[in-house]
Length: 112
Length: 112
Figure 1 (tube, each protein chain N blue to C red):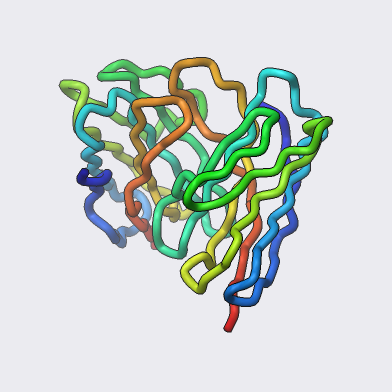
Figure 2: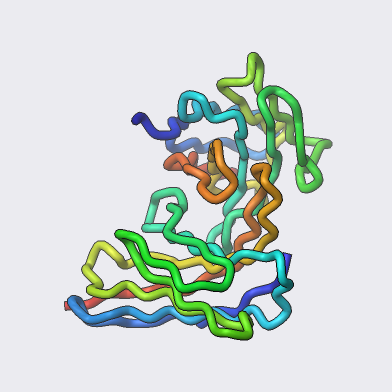
């Protein structure tokens, strides 16, 4: 089966600019997650969707980050405006059962 | 979710068994132990999980002590492709998909 797809793979922007990331989960996976991974750390959950509804966004910086999952399939994560500390890898994952989350390759963001 | 403690790094010779320890002394009765790994520039990958019995699959074995305060992930014949960061995660299995709380993991280096 096809894995989780993410684009772009790399993005370089200047601070205060906006950026958007796209994720296409594995077909049939109702749960979708966005994680942020700062260099040297483990991934940290930003937001979790169940179909097109938000289950957990407690660690999403809502003043600058937003995410949506229209029609319960693809999802986009946006940062506006970006700060230097947003430099990280943004990982999308999807799951259908509790144990196994399938991760995409991530989008590597550098904010200058 | 219970906190876990892992050594920051380990080395293993190719072809030998890699034994990765994890302490989770505050684990509660309904919390499972999960292992994921992250190869460089890729998203995390599920390996195995267990509650109290030892578990084995095609990737690895999981040994959980009788008091459940620690566990060991065993890669029986490590190869260079097993070089990765290994994350031990403890969480409640609620029956619905939920987030993973990653620590900093153990960086396993497999050498010739």
